[in-house]
Length: 251
Ligand code: PGA
Image 1 (cartoon, rainbow, N blue to C red):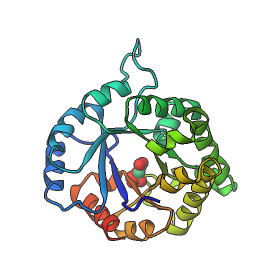
Image 2: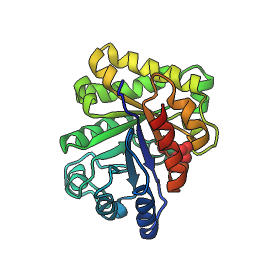
Image 3: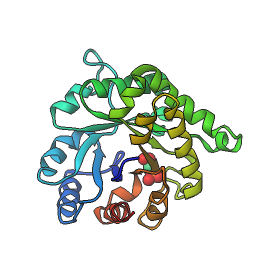
Image 4: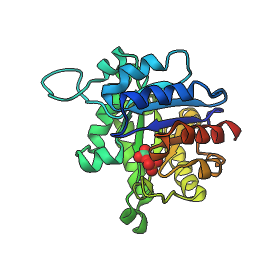
């Protein structure tokens, strides 16, 4: 496990030019040493954010990427373009993309591969629905989502990637997984990777996402297999996000 936690903001379809500047300005006043921090934001703001993040430790990333290198894909953005403007990472397979925009396990794997080919770290999201959890299928669902990625990029590919466990029922609902529920899945995911390569598994950062707030971050981050968080709603205000970073620093 990585010594230092990683806390990633996921703004989703929120923000404005003004909020980009304000958020970065406020973050620049905090002491972010002791944790790694990134912000994934809508594509139109990425150039602004890359510039505003200069001189701060905050890394900038996208919320999605097309799996192709280039071509006739109107409206899409390639990994090469994201790297070109100074991004360092990209979320792939967020459950909102899977459910609303038809991203299959195979497509998510292709996106992870595209990101890696441009030296972007993919944040690969996996997670079960409430129905799947209630049917006892959590491990089966998350490991098969991960399996598709390993099948394509190989376990070594994961050494440049980040994994995020985001139970769908916890995203944006205010209903976070308990630290024990999250730990159980994180440990299972790490054990799954360890069957391929123990060192990759040990060094893989597995983030938890789903209603993380300043008030519950510390107990989640205290779990041995939780290496940080992917933060939606609570990342929009720099103050709240900082509260979560503080919890990551203090573990
Ligand atoms: P949330 O979203 O923190 O608002 O639950 C997390 C995510 O979707 O990444």
